[in-house]
Image (cartoon, rainbow over all chains, first blue to last red):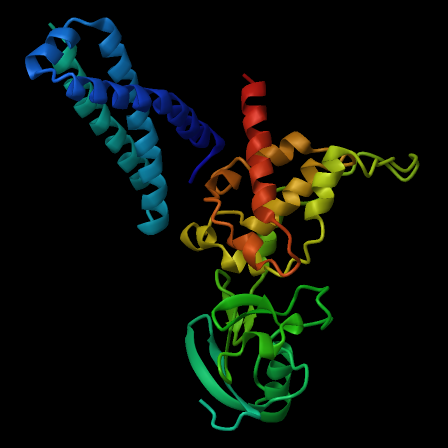
Length: 110
Length: 241
């Protein structure tokens, strides 16, 4: 159920996620050790295109990567095939995109 | 368990594709006895209807593989003393293949996947051409040589959890064969092989668990061959774009 195209999509999204995860962890350490309040964090993120791009890219990469991973598990463990498998993969990808981008927009929009 | 140390308690799977169960036999211990010796003894001395497959008896033909005490093995080269638990031996047909009868499995799906993976030689020369010169120290030849001693026993295929979870997966043996041809300078269909192993059941489904390399009786490493195929298909993916 994994073609070369899906395999490459999963590997490329992993490559994209790796530095973003490190950046996110560094940010968490900075925010907590610096004692930033919610308001102070939002004042930095709201209206910031770089933060919207940083977390927006992360959400897109996660949505594609996770959907392909779950697709393999569903096929091997639950024996899903064909249309049902495609619908599950696309639905999960769409849900993660919707939930993730909604969260990103809520902290980066003015 | 048998109280007599000179006797083995042997459970042999009996049945067909519709189902079956284990049947017990008492088999005398012998010097340097192999698992295949046990099966032959049962068939010749106790039950002539026992079905199994073998040919060469010396680890070359790859036809006698069975599941012995839960692990796929070539039975002609597996000594009883190496695998017996106490005096107990359990012998079953190979996993991941349809059972024809008793210990004999249908190998058609296994070999069909070799063809599906383009694991057949694609000649480029005719008998009128000179013999192709192959440099044994060439990197690609060394890669091919490392994978070429496969005897088609299907031990790797039966041991592979990915095959179990995904029956469309081509499996370690077919992909290992494809890798030898990808590295064979005499083969004329390198890109065709890479396309064939990039389809739905192709090499990218391998989870790199490594059962194929762990259980291969010839100590080959199909997982290394599959990693090579992944690498080459990735290169071709970017090369085409």
